[in-house]
Length: 379
Ligand SMILES: [Fe+2]
Ligand SMILES: [Fe+2]
Image 1 (cartoon, rainbow, N blue to C red):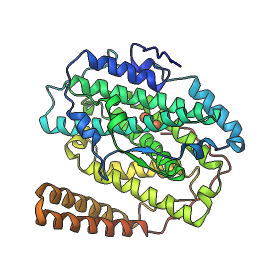
Image 2 (image 1 turned 60 degrees about the vertical axis):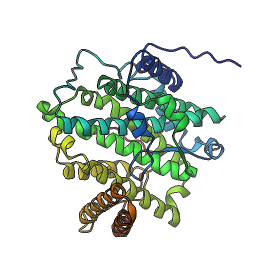
Image 3 (image 1 turned 30 degrees about the horizontal axis):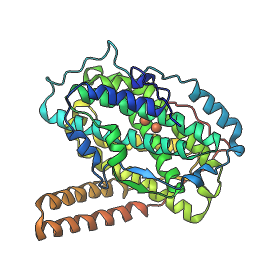
């Protein structure tokens, strides 16, 4: 059967992920752009966003009956599509790439490519779940989330394109390596990345509201509506997790939750600390920002997780800093190459593992999970 995909003028108006990608590809075919960004997006390291695949049949078998009322309300909200047309440049958009200090430009581009890859990683996973599934509750949700993530990735690509670069979304879908995760790991990892995404976008947005002189690029002014999409995605995963109580109740699964919380938080910390000039330009103290995002994320995850990490514990910050130093050592070893480089790299990896264990073994703070997961965006 031949399915005709109509291509809307811009990904911001697309009703499906496929339309959004087609609209973005159409833009690229009319201009010459560098594919360097695609190469960066193709990288798979511990710190770069990955693409995931999973057991789609198992996910398709989820039954949302226990959370039906909240589920229907959330889907109706997503179907009403409050952000249709939002992810598109307007008169407010005044980007000054030429006037940007080169170091800042490099870090900002790195931030955009990494964000675009992360957004698109969600898109490909959700799109695939929609394609493979037959459970209409599940496919409806994943089609709506794929639509949102494709718009987000498309919009970041619009910003990059002005700097003469872009991430080739179609190429990435086909060529980037996919990492297999069992469905339950997908739930934890994706739920957390949606929650942390919300916290990151809204923290920057609120900060810039107070310091309008620090808005060095217009994309930040789109962050409020943006984070509301991520908030809804997080709500959806909270409901999915709620349908299977064992996901948050067994001893082993609690360890997995703690593992993912520690991994996601420490990865963010390390990655953000690698962009000092970017954060300085925003007037954001990167250490404050990290802790603030963790705090907001932890508040959010109280809706479903039986504990939160103790981010004020005496061992927390020093070991995050150790992780960061260790990751610099790994990078330096890699860059150097040879036997000396390998030894440096292995030493760094051992230090990172040690710091991770020190973080992981900090006693968590117990949380009484409420009967309903429903939350409103309050920040
Ligand atoms: Fe997104
Ligand atoms: Fe999202």
